Length: 477
Image (cartoon, rainbow, N blue to C red; front, side, top):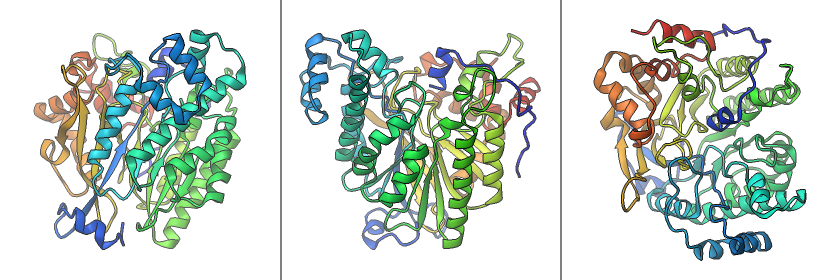
């Protein structure tokens, strides 16, 4: 069922502060793949693994020694690895920081080890660290726009080359994030045009038609892919375009034409998938609904909420949900990122967004990623294993953290289980404690979730509109 917005679509939305920006900041697989990793989940069915990770936010400027920075600026991306290997900084990024090279290297080693027979890998955005051009200028004094942009391009090239090495032959299907840009909140058209080839060559590895990919990706940061051996169409959206942060200060929709074009394209792709009998996997960076962590800060001592910070502009969210509802049952899987947290959203009945936790610990989370079990017939996820890196450990490493089916009740597919779980998180103290404990992927000491603001995190799962969320929080008991 499609929930209509309670918000006034044309109302002026508060512009986000810098801090808030940062906070927002198969049928037919080959017999070989099935033979490598069959596993029964739903009775009478088999599954295969798909690894998903998100929010690397690689920061090439973690070592600010002048000599190292000068070498990075003067060298091409293919020489960067040896430069980073020579850095005296060997400790992993601390909570609150973007991903440095030691953490990046450790994460990719773990991904390579645990990808198993995953026929493809999914990534939900933000390859680049925050404000790379700003910090390069701060540390080196470089002001030339071409050099600053070229450094971001080299960073993207280096990151995608290293991901390719870890992924082996598996294509990496991705969505673009807000930091994947020159402007600080993008992706902008120049960045997309200059880096489309790197994305295609190093990540997609032939999984998408090159001409179609370049046409839509360079235009707006979205594309489709149909990887070989899977009866699936992967649709990757640019949901950063839906963010209130890209609106004009007077509240007008300065990118309305671009968003309308993307949503019309989305509608066409869903219709094409239905016509050809393909299941749809939907990738996005920012999910719909509320920014839970920011909204939770607005809860008063009595646990009441007057306003909510939303991820998307309400008109765009309404049009998106209308399109999804028009093609009921077409989407088998939806993954997002952006929040860095272990959470999920129920967009509408039958449509659950799995939010992949971030590798970057910049919001206080421990680095994490997931390996999903995908059911063969429906191509829907049925279970997952979470891996995380305990940064407080004296010898931090990515270890197996928990498995969904062992932590929570299971009821059919993963989406069905998650829909059933949401009300239980209010009625079961044990399940609520578990969910709250996993939210920051293990870094519970830094978690700001309290008994007072918990209703925001609970209601944020299935309340997609600001007023509905406030009503649910204020009536929670």
